[in-house]
Amino acid sequence: MSPMKPESALVRIGELSRRLGVSADVLRSWERRYNVLRPARSQGGYRLYSESDEHRIRVMQAHLRRGLSAAEAAQAALRETSPPPTTPPMPHGLSAASDAMARAFDALDEPLAQEVFDRLLIEFTPETVLRDVLLPFLHDLGDRWCHEEITVAHEHFASNVIRSRLAGLGRGWGRGQGPRVVLACPPGELHDIPLLAFGVMLFRCGWRVGYLGASLPIADLTRTVAADPPRLVVLSAVDPARFAGLEPELKRLSGIAPLAIAGRGASEAIARACGARLLRDDPVTEAERLSA
Image 1 (cartoon, rainbow, N blue to C red):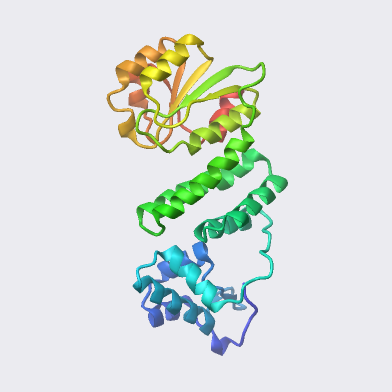
Image 2 (cartoon, rainbow, N blue to C red):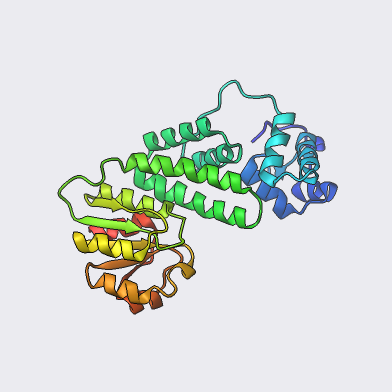
């Protein structure tokens, strides 16, 4: 929070909303996601906003009228109204690190995003980083993309950075003496990061991981599994349509090796139709449950 100023220079969010013509809910969202508002606290605990906050939002509004996304407009307003820091402050704690990561991705700042990742992995276990930071961030990222608050470029940038870090955590995951699992996404499914996170967690629990990636034809998966049946096959999809019509093929696959389906696109009905196990929880919890 910014230092306390004389209260006569500060206003509460309702008055700021009236002046700017922006709802209080939107202002709170911009404050939380982009750090574009920096309120002080009154003695009674109320957030109080300054003329600098009002000016920063007006600059952001001007960029929005030019066609920038909310994330781009906020970053432009911050650049134009704030002196650049000499070095980026490194966050401490999950909440601060989550906020810093979101800001780094919104700014397309790959070096800062990597620094935040490094700090998280120093302070917390990979299980905590994945379950409490990365997976919630990815869910929020998808929602923001659906509401056109970020561009496709932002979504691709964040996904590629996260994917590369997960791949690093999974290096060598096919070696060892533990049970073997084969992971893939069904045809047309490109959102493989939750599956990558699941593979990393299984690896940390002692499994050997065969990762076949996004949008894999079921016939190819079946041939691979038949040649060397693993302890478990897991298919993951965000979109329920990716499982539609595959029940006969998946039923044959489940006759070769135990099959599980996961992701928001999986359901109990699909699992029953193809003789699969449904993994309902987040990738970290399910990996721990399977390993127990």
